[in-house]
Length: 280
Image (cartoon, rainbow, N blue to C red; front, side, top):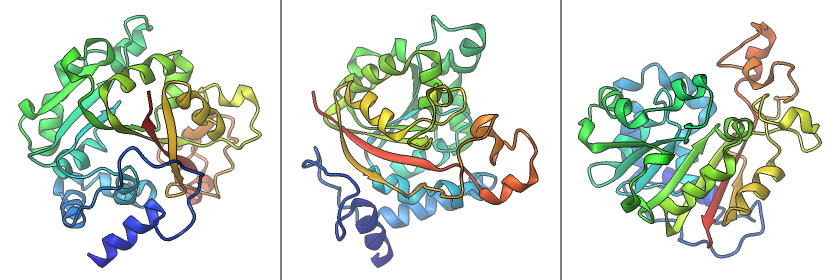
């Protein structure tokens, strides 16, 4: 317990100055006496054997604590893809929680986008059930254009992991943030983890095609859609990442697109970790 309280203190900034000037949050950091044990069980699940190698880079326990996610919540996992976070969130949220996978509205997208992101509701619950051992009936999944109106205002947290660059280059970022805004409760929070460009990176490098975005740009875009920054964390920072690779972030692990052996030592990308609350 003491170890979990230390972690919660660190990520919520309860004993040190916050990383950003912040107004009172919409919801205080939840008190969760059992969270450490539940998280340890989720991370140790045998179904995560292959996933576990990335825990050292992705910091799942600290990241979810910073995003103030606790069992029993209703949580949207935006663009769940291969299920790395699904295999943590579903068991962690527990029988009283609700996991929702959400993909973007790609009705106007090209064929590749439709193949990759389309039809989530039809295919994803069965995949998630296989990944987690939880019945498919307990897994909800939608594309942004087919979310039932009854879901609006019912979600505690929306989590977007390494996805904003795709929405940026697809021209969907503002529309998807509007959907997320509708889904969240009045006191709901949006957690974002995103590959971080240098503050002086040229515009052409941060158009989404390289995977990196400038942190100030992300904050500005999200706040323009009715959110307010609550806090920023360096949980997922990596000072060794120069964020200037010709082929973008995919030159780093785990993709190693250009097969440059010297890049393995850098590890995964430098990432901003931001928490916003719904304000209007």
